[in-house]
Image (cartoon, rainbow, N blue to C red; front, side, top):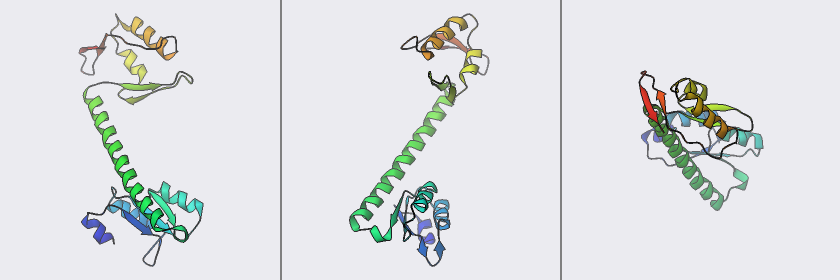
Length: 174
């Protein structure tokens, strides 16, 4: 099966964990190493819910118990596994493109939680680093407006200001 999987052209793997030549989740790890983009649905005789959770946490798209499988359930599980894997891959690619674009544009995006007061950078530099690179003539009013928005005193924030880029040049930001 692994040799055939290596050839490509496989949409989904239905992995029986009770085969004589492979036992447990070790087979899942082999499949993932060989073909990480191929979704895997685990099929087992074990009705242990923790084992099902372990299989999904290890990367399986779904888990089916042999005693309860019928053609409708199997078909649905395989179709959903393929679609979930495609959606996961599309999301991963989109996030990677966004990260590359934001890095190339020398832009920072951060999340701020006004309830907890926690801030963290999603892409780029943290808010504290951003504040240090504001032009001295504009820093006070830019930070004031920004902090008012974070603290909920304003419903939105927009500003045009100068920002010092990593090469030392000043860039106009809106």
